[in-house]
Length: 262
Length: 367
Image (cartoon, rainbow over all chains, first blue to last red; front, side, top):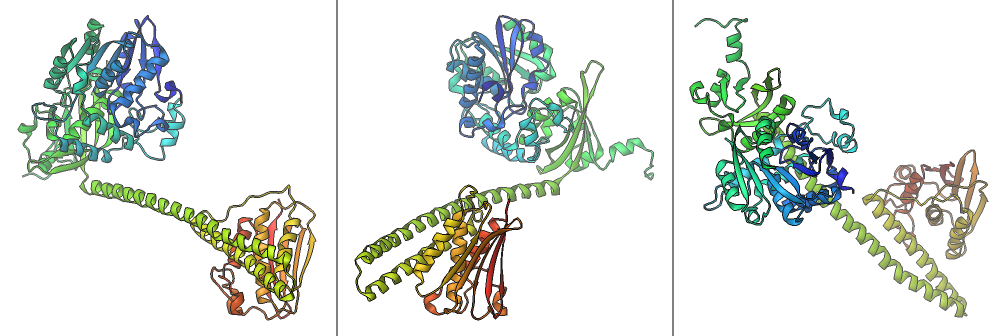
């Protein structure tokens, strides 16, 4: 299986340096549609979908491999090797911030800088640590996901899986962005919200930018500050943007902060 | 209080049969209608200016932030999503919602409108469907495992039953070479008859078990190799095993028959075995195999008492046994399996029985 098809990789832009964008839980590479174009002039930009999301090859989904974020980080490293990335900028949203931290450790030299948009190394409270959620609330989320199928039905799956190059097949359907197989979405939610990557942050040895939104209930301010303290060479920028997806709600602010950093 | 007016749009908004919520781009509540206030128990003043997610349960908050908010930005709407608000009593208010984003000319979000309907029953129904699906999945998996075990058991059983039989057969052959007296020859012939009958029974039992549990009888079709020698061999074996009985055979196979040769051999063996058991012992069993009119026709006939009317209907059912002497009693699978083999070849197996003769006919299309 070729990595490029497996992860629905798209390379655009020009320039000596590369910038790779990784989406978080709940969507796909569409998440970057308002940010990536701003960098395509000076960077070679790389967009991809995690296996199980968007236009990735669902047949490549392996329960065992993707039961930890390390499996997703392995994919990022494979994409990097395939494209010959060196000293690239890794931009991760939400859970992909941690995937980027893991990938940077797995392949020294591949990523020269990390940008973390709304990162959290641990969503569940534990002792003095504030993550914002209790274990029970996360279990409720996993149950609740069964109620929302995002326009997905089993009958539709073959059309999407077999024709990634023909999006018109899916056009009549609502929610054509961010479609995902419900079982995989649930498994991704589990690995996202139950992971604990606090110990990995200290091992990040490249300059890191943390973008912290105001009013983000998924990754709140104390969590962003924790990440900033834990990563040796990091800086944090507090955005005016609210919510968890500033890359969509306030792309200009995100682009400006990133430009200063890279 | 005045009666409601049909053209009162304020009333249509406030007391609509669904809840309305308007959000600002920062996710805070601008306005809600009275229907929602009635359902949730809060006052309009309490809700205004708060985050919409403040009134959701935690699962709903995460879902809203990770799915609904980004999708609204990307496609401007999001229809038919489930969302749970929480009432003042702490009870879940289960709803299905549509959301629409209002934008300015530059595409910037101005507001988001939500229309929500209560969906308690629907959600319970969906939940039950999901549970039923999960249970069905688990049951199917366990059935598959059981079925695999049975298949393995049948294969091992067949192997273990055939091995000792092969030893008996080999022993009888060795003794046969050294036998001198008529009595010795008789005993050895009887041994060989029994071995052949036993081998046939094992084949039938295994086929029956597989046919019932797996995907029926599977065929290994072959047109290149001739069918006739296989029929010869089967009939010769039956002749050897049935001293004193006559089996007349007539062949006219002019074109290749697209069949599983060993299965057709088994079919003939079962039919002739049946004829020997039930037919008159002083009359021959007549086998005829011909190709004609695009068909392969194979018939096995015997004389003797006709099959009783009552038995005719059940003849091809498993475990059906006619009235014969105990020593020839089989399991009642021979005809059933012959019929299954016929069916697997897209053919038919029929029977006619009169005072003159009883005749089983297998017909299959030549391709």
